[in-house]
Image 1 (cartoon, rainbow, N blue to C red):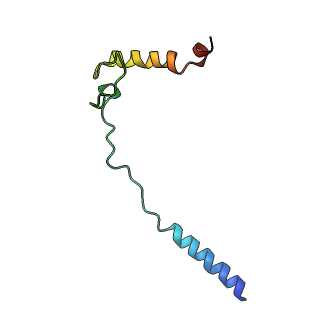
Image 2 (cartoon, rainbow, N blue to C red):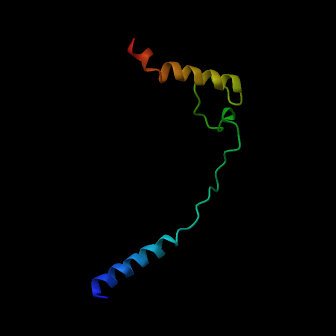
Image 3 (cartoon, one colour):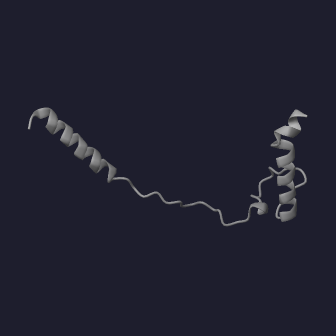
Amino acid sequence: MNKPHRIVIILACMGGLAACGDTPQTASGIKSDSQHFTGTGKPYQAAGWKQGDRNSWEQQLKVRAQQGQNDYVKVN
């Protein structure tokens, strides 16, 4: 075998071994076990939404969908 072929084979082996060194990625430290409508306890709230009240949470989502994200309402 000549020198360029050896270099290509060595580089291919190094690339293959580099893929084996990947560490597993796990989700840790994420707190996602509470309901969305319970809130975060921070003072950044929309007017009319009461923290912990599911009905007011759903009503705020409907209002946001109609007023803030509906482009047909914005055009007219």
